[in-house]
Image (cartoon, rainbow, N blue to C red; front, side):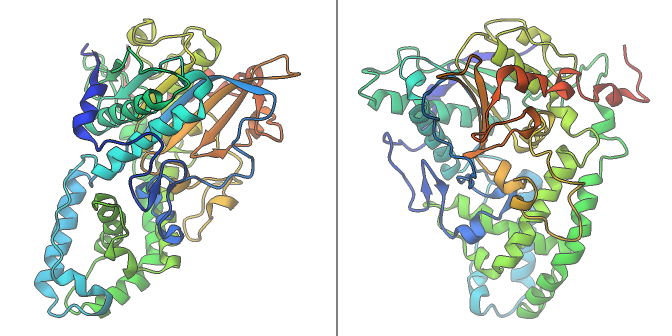
Length: 478
């Protein structure tokens, strides 16, 4: 079993721009509120939106008379280039346009000289900075703990996720070094990072694709079963509603283009990807080719992908997040992990690779896995029925659920425990991108807090291993 325990965080100094304590590096992006340029569209790019502070009906400040006793962050990696397959498709679309269209005018004029330079899979410089900013923000938010404690850090093994963990620790350490209250840099820096490989034969609660090579124990019913296409089918139904008018307009403005439905979506994708790849993260010229209403439609298109791929719209979606949920319970209660789904028993039984009794934790993962984890925890479960495929249900009407509100680039969830004057039990609060969740499933109070026991009791789905037994229907297992 290849488990990497290494002080990788120091590499971040060579991989990312320096970030002075508490300062902002981009005119569009801020440490405390995230990306704010043209928020009427940039907050509607689904999971390709840069992190931004989501509106919250409940204040995210520490309630009066309370002190934080535990702070866990679960983070997505920072903004990246497209995946290898998508970058090839985007590049081909641009070449097709430039080969077939003879005259680019008006807002399309930039396409005549546009050069496709996006890479594949790697963090952009902006994405690196997002995680540095996140580390600074976490340090400052939990200063009463962070000034004298160090976080226990884990990362899924994809390079961009590991690099994001490194960048986050760099920001955390920069804030600590500059904090006069702490008085000194942390001598344990660079922090060890438990890196869980995303390779065959590794159980990984931060990445859903896992199996034992020899026993072939895999959630085949999720990975390649009858519901494997449920997300793409949902997206196709919505695309058939909102894409045709956009496609017609682009093809009329670009004679000879003959863009397909898929290529029309690619043209929209190029807006966020070029934005996060730019040197100062300014809005790409691709973004102006579409209206505000169309960006809302696009964001919902991406929301359907996450909802029907890894959330309540997929029969086994929430089950993919059960393992991590049980690890969270173990950390909250300082008890050994009790799980028979996707956890790695070798890792979780060792205090070196799964430390209990710590007060600061940081885990780094992907958008799909975070979506499954949120669902396994029962978050965003107040929506009546499934998300519709032919009309938009915006996040405020969907119990706060959308891909942009939950899993943008550099998304982060905070799981807090707090002691409060007059309360005999510790309280739990959950925030996703600064939005305090009401936690109705465990009787959350007006500040979104449940007692620790009530919160754990509400997680019966996870504690019962979800529907993990359905993963093996029709499979031979040992």
